[in-house]
Structures are given as C-alpha cells and as structure tokens.
Amino acid sequence: MKKKLVVLSGAGISAESGLQTFRDSNGLWEGYDVTEVASPEGWKKNPALVLEFYNMRRRQALKAQPNAAHIGLADLEKDFNVHIITQNIDDLHERGGSTHVIHLHGEIFKMRSEKSLTPTYEIKGDIKLGDLAPDGGQLRPDIVWFGEAVPMIEKAAQITMGADIFVVIGTSLVVYPAAGLIDLVPPSKPIFVIDKHIPSVRNRGNITAIEKPATEGIKGLMEILKGMR
Image (cartoon, rainbow, N blue to C red; front, side, top):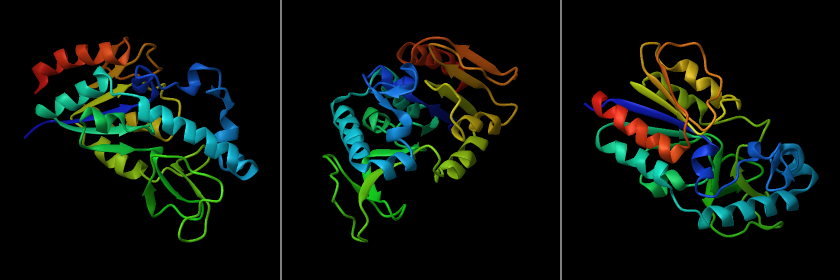
C-alpha cells in the first residue's frame, strides 16, 4: 500500500502562477479592503462590488497556469496516496494533475444561491447582480468568507488524522480553522513545511523546514521523499 501523503496548501503556491495574495499587500487584495469583498457584511453592503471583485479573480484564475509545484505534487501520486487540502479557491491543483483535492474556502468556478450552501453551479464567466438561482436567491460565488462556517473542515480533519506524511506549503498558518490541521497530525508522523518565510510552527521534533518558494521547495521535498516510499 502507498503511504498517505497529506498536503495543506495556501496562497503561496499559486503566487508563482501570478495570483496575488492579500497578505502580501497589507490586508489589501488587488487594491480592495478584504472586509469589503470577503465577508457577509461586505456582501450585504455592496453585492455588486463583491461580484465584480470575484468576476475579476475568476478571469485571472482562468488565465493562470499550474506551476512546477502544482505539477510536482501531482507527480507524487505515482508513489504516494496524495490528498490535497487547499485554502486556495483556484483550480490549479486540479489542472496540475492532482486527483484528490479538498477546497476549504470554496471554489472560484462555482456559484450558489445566497440563501443556501447547496446546490452549486459551475461558472466560468461573470455573475451579475440580478442573476438568480432557482430558489429566487441572488447567485454569489461559492466562497467561504471571513466569519462563515467552513463546511469541508471535518472531512479535512479526518484525512489529516490518517496522514503518514504531512506537508504544509505556501501558507502562513494564521487563518483558522485551516491552521489547526497541523495539530491533528499523528505525533509520530513527519511534517514538512515549505515557504519563503517559514511560519511559526509548534515545537515538534519531526518538523523539517524547507525555506524556499513553492516551486523550488517541492524539488527538495521530492528528493527527501524518495527514501520514504
């Protein structure tokens, strides 16, 4: 049986594909205040602004291409049972070839009624004010905003607790509940942290830090993992 390799990825892995992270710009996301475009309060205040913001992000995600880190993680499926738990809303992991991906914070290419979490609908173009779901509710991006529940966290927790190897890549480990997943890794299992700036991690003797951008860090990780198959 292949060992279970669980990966928690964040915005840092997509940054090398040209998708900006708001934490790199002092709380501004493409020039927008995050609270205005990524919260239920912002939606109630100005839904048209929120829709245009995510329409822009959807256009950017369509143009972006998977980078070597996305592709490298997919290649690891040859030797490991790989599960990706991502905080990212783009589909670069899937386009890079990964087959088991959980999106904790939703997906930019899905939309739903503002009245209900389900069903969701695929969307590649723009969502406009006045576009309604079958239940009569305004369609909104299927994104988990600040202050909203994270529906996929329980499934992610179960996967993490069964990990043989856990990898953190491109995330600052400050956004909860995602950041708490590292505490669910079995104590005896190795953890690898890949980032340009290694985040503060718990005092565990089995953490290996690879202080490099995602694309370079994955190369180093793959070398180490050759001896752990």
